[in-house]
Image 1 (tube, rainbow, N blue to C red):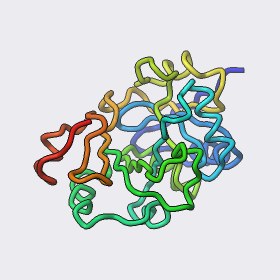
Image 2: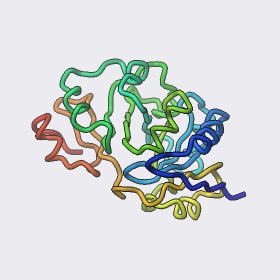
Image 3: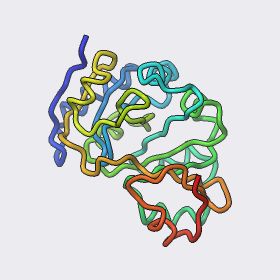
Length: 216
């Protein structure tokens, strides 16, 4: 059975559509939606079965952690052990935006999302559909690109449908994504911080704020 697709206004997401998607997520379903980078596949962070389903649908290795998507910096308080003082500058400069930050995690974060690691990647996107959806669910969402692992990430809803549409519950069609490039991943638990993946934000841009970085 193919996933349902609903068009959504990317500037003023329709409340009824967002609430329908949120209800699916709260019930353990999977929803694909646009971020400013690529289309993401989301699940309730605190539903281990839903998180595990993402790995299976994508064919993603079970040792490759997923990010957690928030809609407010205050959400960090119950997801990470601490926010290093130096990290506040990078948060102020690039959040919300296409940057995933890795912190030491709290025990409240299930190991299914982090693959048993002591760290967790956190993303605070600026896409209004994504932010509205997280707010409607009322808690952070696990987030990964909405595609089969190993193939290019989707930047349009039809690509998501063609790739994984048979295995998910709903696709929110907000049109083509703004950037079309995945988020940059920065590990803040190393000294100096380490660029795990360079994406929409360049190493040079981050080094202007934090100084010299390691590059994985």
